[in-house]
Length: 320
Image (tube, rainbow, N blue to C red; front, side):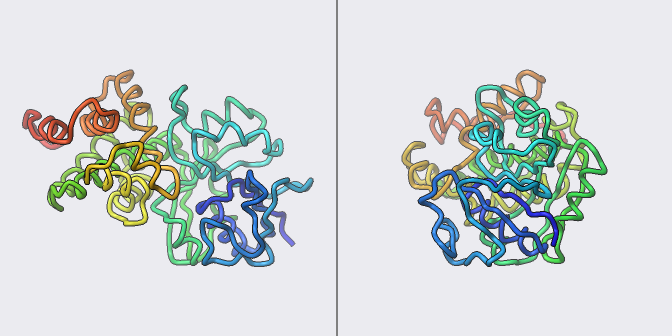
């Protein structure tokens, strides 16, 4: 029998990853912070997908050495669970965003808190419910070391969930974080009745904005044209299951930011990521007009008509 896999996070994404890891033949220990959220046979966020006998929910991890650990908690809480990681075992960070106070990406947080743990990140156009159902999907698994990225991708891939190895950790993490902000703007566009043409334009210019910032930070433009960039952006900006899109939809229909957040079944990372992206962009001298507008709108500093006018009145220039 192969070494077990640990999954940290009992939400929808953690549950889906646990179900996927079980399909690779591993025994899976699925950790959740609160013991009361661990009923027998199913998890609260995905109750329609019963856990197989090879997935063991727990509130305390067993004293065994796993093959790897998959961490699926919101980025703002990532540091709080890192003490649970076993030393020397690869941790795959399956969260998207930027730490609000430090502007750190997930791998930066891991390096700061647990230098003894080799890291990787998993990002791509994946809705938890579809991964749980075993529907076809793909993602990128990035690590600073090419061998680590390839080995982990091989270990965790199945015919229905293909993982592509990458060493562009900056591009993958930036794309995964920034697409949430553009997804909120996409939802606002549809919620306010501005039309599909406007949404298509916003997504396209959003990708250009993300790519500019990624390359300024040292990422590769090709990464942003792939699964962790364009792929994740398209899904998050158009899929009805996207929490960030739902957030924007509610805002576009007139709901306040706090009320919209309270109405969501999970975390909309784009809300906390927008200001962090702004700070990164300003530090590196990169223009991010969509991010700037949606951040100001969510913070109540401008109205929707003002945000729309700000974007549409920008000087015309060559597409780039």
